Image 1 (cartoon, chains in turn yellow, purple):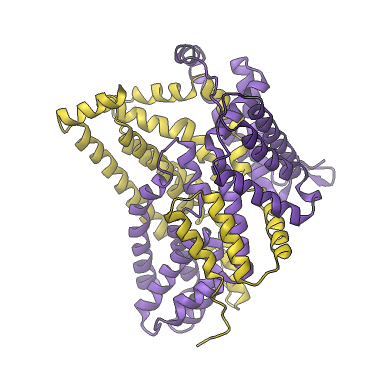
Image 2 (cartoon, helix red, strand yellow):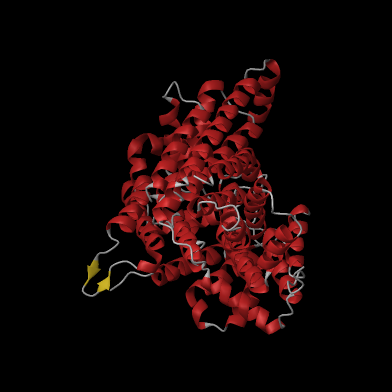
Length: 242
Length: 318
């Protein structure tokens, strides 16, 4: 057995798990885990602070994708972008929340596979357009929805964007993940064509589409079941609206 | 001149400073001072982060976490248009409202794909190291200009609306950033090696199916812990994929790599550590349950992980 591996830093992982289970504030949990991990790896306090500071500065690019679009999106929302998106979809009689999201899944996955990953996203597409449209499609079919189902549709809209992005982008040959895999295999003395890595991703990309589309069909089935179940569902809906 | 990501750091820093000031003078925010302090500190990171000693930045991050952890980050009551005038505006502007919304991704794609190799003099037009983000920044500015022109609103109103959305997300805005720091610290402290040791040292890998399953499940598990498939891949590929699957069972390395990375992505769908994909959208969509997006993704992630194991097992020697 390899005894040179230091298992103590796993305490940091334990802090994260415990923190999320106790529903403590995640930002505080993450920083507490930083402290525990640093202590377990026997880092001096100042070195730990420096290490955290350097990492915090070097990862400043991450929140940009969230912070840059908010002014434009917020302004359009003020003047009724979401109302407009809902009005547009409620005129399409065959639209259901599930079908609409399946179309979005297909569009998101195929465009990501062509390298166009920035065509979607939570702040730019899901919040202002996709989620309100999915809600409106369900409301056009069944009338006002109880909050529980409304939240479920929104969560599925966000999930659909993620699934489409993850399993589409990885079959685009110039994507960072492919470059990373190629570099690591090369370092181990294995020569592969990056194009082959991309191509071998296709079976999983198709499976992801089929499985998630099936889950979106189940969303439609759930809506149908709960919204047409009779007076009970209607009463709940009335109460939630009031 | 090259348009670099540093220009957008300044822009975001100014936006965050505005959010801090607007909260400071807003009496409808029950914690206006601590909220302003939180966004003000974050603004400092963007405006001057590279000029401050790293240890102070570390202390700044801890201060922000303490403010957030003790409920110091709250929102004011936004002054939205009344429902009736908003609907009237929507009816008046009609489908033209979609134009700025679609300009944003469109300009981003044009920048990231079309202007990739455009140079002015000897310098590239857009920062090649952060091409997508710089393009997104341009897209956001074009969309804001178009939205102002269309609605006759001032750019200042745009900043107010940005504050409304940032307030609504609250501390969730900084969570992906802080988790990325934790991920870097995890690799520095050797958490990766420890997890790989645990997943590989106690399981016999001499059966083909067991080896395939350990590789795929290890990728997912590791990603759940670290929040990032890119951290999982080198460890699991180096620990199981290359020596066992390729070395012993003669797997196709391209297939081993592709399915390994996708197994890691199944883990990304199931972890609050991947906050920008899983927790931030819950905040953006006003969901009371911050884990609602993860709950919606588990029924896709688990069958897909099983599908990956079967695909790798049956296709590995093609």
